[in-house]
Image (tube, rainbow, N blue to C red; front, side, top):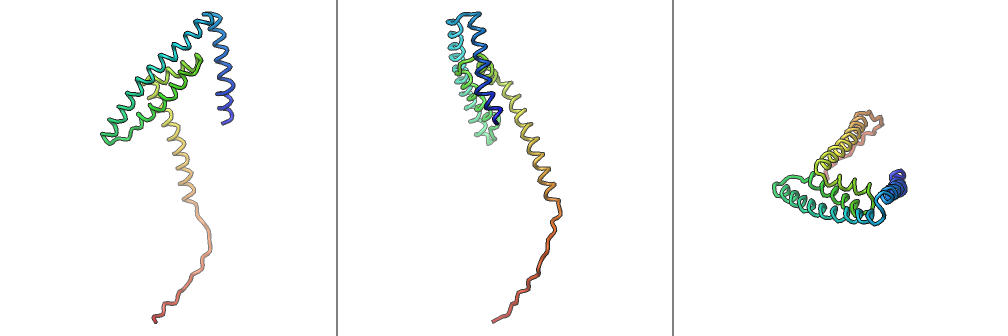
Amino acid sequence: MFLYLLIIFIILPIIEISIFIQVGGFLGTFNTILIIFLTAAVGVYFVRQQGFRTFQKIGVELQNQQIPVQGMFDGLVILIAGILLVTPGFLTDIIGFLGLVPQTRVLLLAMVKNFFFQRYSNAQKQYKKDINETIDGDFIEIEEDHEEK
């Protein structure tokens, strides 16, 4: 967990700053800032559009009495993509725009499912292994007197 926090709060900003310096040196400060605002505006537009589609998709799946796994996952990824798109930075914008591509979300869901299925199946195997173990113990037979009054 510490490694993930280190990446998010230390390494990612360093990468973003170095990209800002490179792009700013090539395009100029004003154009770099303009691109940042433009990607944020375009990202908000696409997040809103895809968010409405996802809500509609979830509604249809619920009306058909289906569990909206793909729709809920899409909504989560779109939310994270929206946060990344309004965060200043080119790397976060690229990751955010990738989150808005439906094929990327399908691939990401397949990877998440695979991860959890492998984790669950290993836990289930361990559980079955623990169940089949023999437990040694002593017992005392208790006899009760059932006299009628």
